[in-house]
Image (cartoon, rainbow, N blue to C red; front, side, top):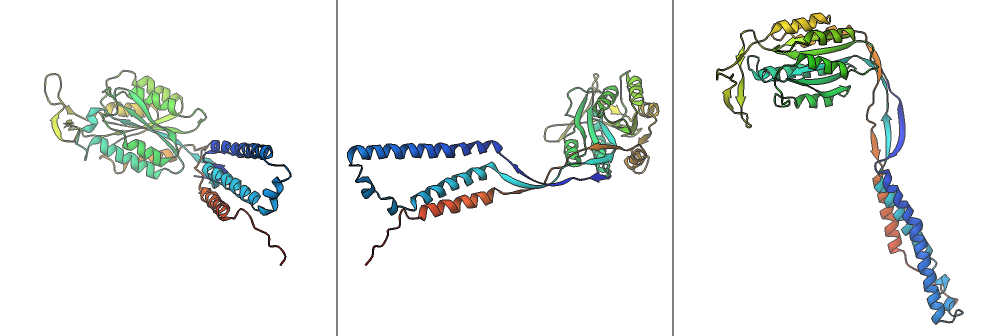
Length: 347
């Protein structure tokens, strides 16, 4: 992927609203001045005004004004430290080339079957992780579907976030059971950014057990919008039972039908093959082909890559400790500075 990074050095604040506290500084100065004026009037009402300079000579306290300034500066530095100044040498960003890929992952109960080790779902998630590790500038999104479809992760170039969202996908994530291929395809088509007029791909991973009638129209919509759908079948033609586990993960039974017979789920390839063919994509069966997810990505790489904008987090150097250190230094100086320096008269 080609990326043009715009490197900047910028000063920013973590908590800019705290700088409003700086308005307290002039208010405190005004309050101090009012107190001094009142004190002076009280002295004048009890003492001869001509005696005040002799009782409170200004030249006996030449450091009082300096102490006041140090206290004020210390307060200012404390407020600036609280504001969280930071210097960023940011990678701000950026134009990037790649393609948009959405993985639609089946989370129906049948994906818990263990004819693919450790289970159909866990193996599928492992393959998606491998896909994410191979992406080079491409953006990825995640659709979870069972009886309904849900956008688990919008299109992103943040592969770490996509990986975290993938880990959260489980058969308990969606309340409605089933295998809604049409909803998954429509949801994926809606999730592609409108500005993307180039290559778009959906990787649909499922065991193929679908009971809807709208698959063909959904696949045709994807084809009309320039979306290629690759399908990956997970499971075996022999099939397997569906384990039922408790909250601790302990096996309690196997999924049964209304007649209390244990259900055997078998990989249904016909629907998956149909979806792929309608969009000029390809169908692969996990286990029948070495590295099917790698083969799918190689096909995707031949698509027309687009240029898009994305962002990277800037790297910041925190500066609040510098302001806090200055505040402490100024405060200690003010505390230990004497109020006055007495003049020595001539001997």
